Length: 107
Image 1: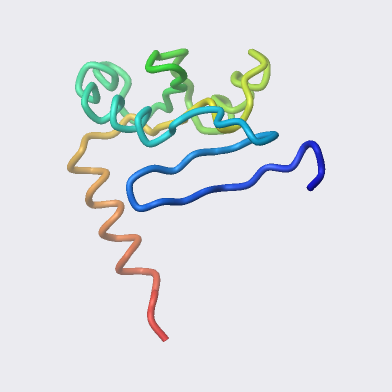
Image 2: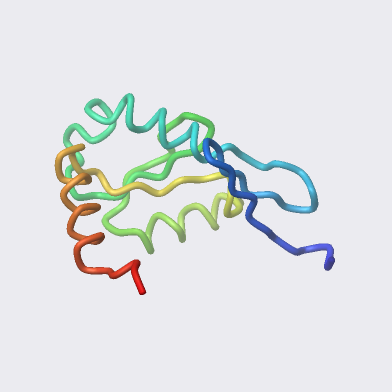
């Protein structure tokens, strides 16, 4: 396997990004932390994108591209960050529902 290869290991409860054979971050736990603290994180930042790392807010950005650019400028790599849209839990559930209605997973 090439030295810079990335691969994704998926289990029922956890998913990890692995780089050079080392687990870089447990993104599932980072998302859970975001979800548990959603109200305080999104307060005054609705519809912006938040950059998260190590259970901390790094910054708020107008869109995903700006957040990703900021992450790259800070030297972060994919797998150790989470970029999340600042929306309420109800809005996220509705987006997920609408996505699943629009996409066919059957034959």
